[in-house]
Image (cartoon, rainbow, N blue to C red; front, side, top):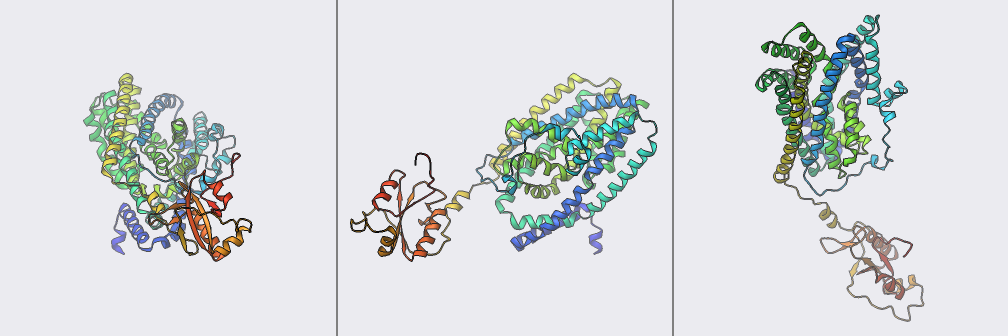
Length: 546
């Protein structure tokens, strides 16, 4: 087992993913029983999220002094919101990357629940912070933590409290580190259960999300963020990419931005020195902004929320344009927590199947590393922008111009990716054909298809219909044309469907054969009245006019 211990954590996770998929494919539905272990892993991931949000936000903001906090808060807040906006718009453009495929809507028990109305007061105003914590109302918890952190700035005797927050933060990180060591086991259970229960068609559609995510990640990482820093400051595009390479690669390899925060600060200070912009004030800004920016959602985190757009496409119910504002605003707040909390919250908010979170975890094995690398680039760019803004060397007009250009490029890139995916990934919807190919599952009886109706003899018209059926030895059923899925001819020419299964069961119980004839809606009443058929079937419903 020494070879296993020598593996990196990322390698072990990939190994767990591969073994899980193999187990699911080999054992099939039996592997679904491993879902309980995957659910336990998910709950462990969620356990420390809300406490860490509160501790990091309150402690990080409480350490700032009033003057610097005001300057950094206003400038940094505007710049962070601007980058958030660009990333969120890029997420909305992701809908352009998904092919226009015919698909069936997926069923989930969450779809039976009544849709919850959008209540901004409950989401954003924590009248009872403990209720918000207990019910994982992440936006309200974030608002409460920010307000408490800002209030601590004016408190004099706060050193001991801030040290306590620092200690709690370290303890929570130790718990998260322990849970992280369980990732190979958790990913194994999740992937085994998913591979054993998901169809090949569903797994092939996951690659659409992965390619779309990678395309959006490439645009934001190598164009949007470095271009914003290069065009609006004295820096060059080459300088930004050169100094961000090592932090990004390290974050990608380790899977966390936390370990590269000192590296990010050092690289930012080096860039400032190269352009003769270093000073005690700029160094102080970098020292404050790097850890503070870490406490706020990064572009990498927000890009992960694009899975909600994918989920809505995946289940056949795309998020409407009227819901985009709610998607952007709610997404910005829930992103303060981890994706283990944010994704389930957003799925529930938009009435999407909660089961999609399992699919997200499978994809996150690949996307999480890219998100971490993007978060490192985000930290570098935000810290540099704030430093140059404090010095008065940030060109705001140019910044807005490059933001608009980046949005246009993101839209064009999304449309191009969608075109390529449509052409490159073979897809043919077989759901209708599979349904039409359905064979009868009811009790076997002799079935005779009749092309022409025969008149009921006059001697039989006065007898009870049941006696006529038993004497004739057959029951005549007229089924409506175009009555899928109740009555229709399958690919073998047999008349099947939900109603026809009931008719077969009835014929079997009566001990007679089954005669079926296709009718139009206008023919059925007269055929029943004259006795040409005994029963009409095919999704017939009682209406005020019929």
